[in-house]
Length: 133
Image 1 (tube, rainbow, N blue to C red):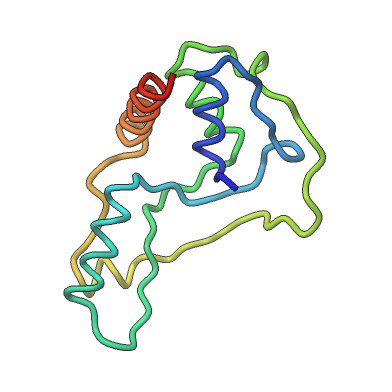
Image 2 (cartoon, one colour):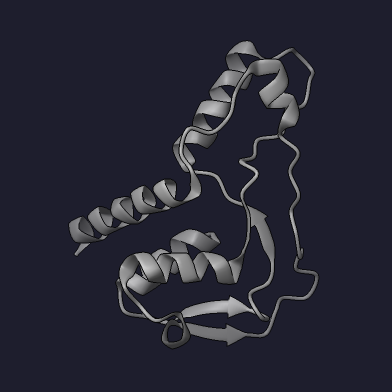
């Protein structure tokens, strides 16, 4: 099963509508994949044994905001690109992350802001789809 952002980007690039649970108001903290990988490496190499570090970017956005941002980047109208579907039973409304320990103790924070990370992610999927077709 694929996750939200890959499904949205690939669907829109292929000209399909995006399935959105409920009203699209579920909230997540979004982080660029390379920043996430660097945080994990920092924890692995510099973190204290048996400690817990949460990785986040203080970038909470709703699913609908994510779709709108992707549509804007692709020059698409979000209202024409969304297919609202019934929400899953027990679907988590919000995942809250407090990554302050990672920043304070290991001096780590994301390098990419949301917009730049999104552009690079879309570019990666564009190239991937070109190679698959």
